[in-house]
Length: 440
Ligand SMILES: NC(=O)c1ccc[n+]([C@@H]2O[C@H](COP(=O)([O-])OP(=O)(O)OC[C@H]3O[C@@H](n4cnc5c(N)ncnc54)[C@H](O)[C@@H]3O)[C@@H](O)[C@H]2O)c1
Ligand SMILES: N[C@H](CO)Cc1c[nH]c[nH+]1
Ligand SMILES: [Zn+2]
Image (cartoon, rainbow, N blue to C red; front, side, top):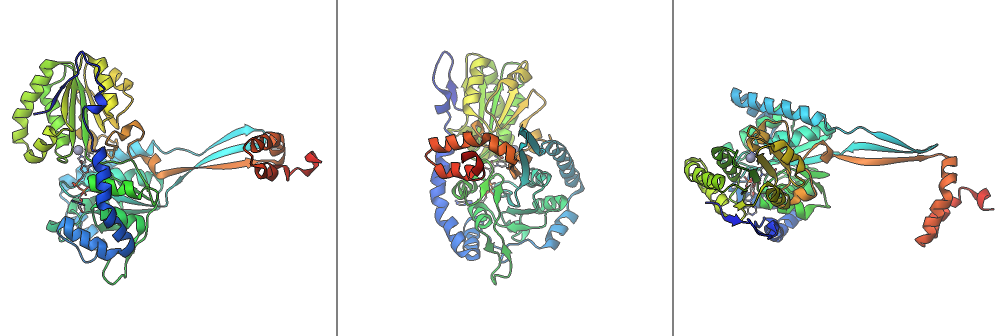
């Protein structure tokens, strides 16, 4: 079922073997550009037109009424409620530990630099809702933003036909459990554009969604493309597009577990990527047999089959785990599972991955819901330079520079020298003007 790529005895660069969605995002950017511009220019009518076209429904009023959010919480199945609360508790525990503290460095006597961490003022959190519903993503977006101290939080999620044009009922309930009361029934690129530019959200223009400073959260290729296009108008977190899993495994791994984990992430999207890297032909063959057994029995068999047989998924045979490590580092997966002997030792040597799941008892699904870690993670190779969503994503570091007269006088000649070297004498003058007696 998986494309087999044999790197044994070879020196081919693994980066070119499994193409990513990268090129597709740039194509998608051009496709959604007119829509994003239309939302910027016309607001509400353009959003409604896009919702009708892509979601097959367009609620007249985009803001979800407070009563509907409350009602969603009230009607929540007790088991789902307990699971969401467990997820929230664990995520809050991990994210509380991420908060950075302000720090003052005494550079010289009388000269200090203080680094203050200031939360972003207003953020828009995207919660997907096309092929699957994601109350867990409400948790993963909201918990770090709240832990950072963000004052104003907006959630957007696509309107659902089976919920009268409101976002999914469980998504609304998760908002209620987390105390989020500003929610809009808008999805896709139009939601990202609405957050970035601000817009009226009803036919008579009585209500407005004011622009946000930053947009975070995962989504399909159209959402990812809109975030890329609007970067600069707003801040964004890393691009978190179609899900990916890579598994580095040896013959100690259980093929049934490996196959189940590959299928679990393929379930998200036909564009999802599932990659197994192993030096064991026996394991590779056994995983293939397991896929043949498990895939037909899985609920979203069509989506999973498309993802697993796509060129973005594959089974890579390598000479040994050292070579496997080079492959997974070059691939830079959103999720990386290590199912080998001494799994922790191998995990600590990985350079590029969004989150690493170590050993037989830490599957990606655990991290998706209840590990306490965050599941909004970079995709498309972005883990080479970006991190997953965290408290840090919502904070800005601001330097406070405080020098006394003596401290400035001491360093003034160096400032003047550097200003002269750069042929920016006015810079030097801004310092020396303060010490006329020294130049007299
Ligand atoms: N990387 C992560 O952290 C992470 C986490 C969760 C989910 N995901 C990914 O998020 C994605 C969720 O996708 P989804 O589709 O279920 O929900 P989604 O909300 O991202 O996308 C649905 C929206 O896409 C828009 N759309 C659909 N077809 C379109 C088209 N042809 N042109 C323009 N817009 C269009 C619609 O407006 C719709 O509201 C999946 O790819 C999943 O793998 C990633
Ligand atoms: N695996 C997804 C991307 O990290 C997150 C998710 C949410 N629900 C289920 N899975
Ligand atoms: Zn998942």
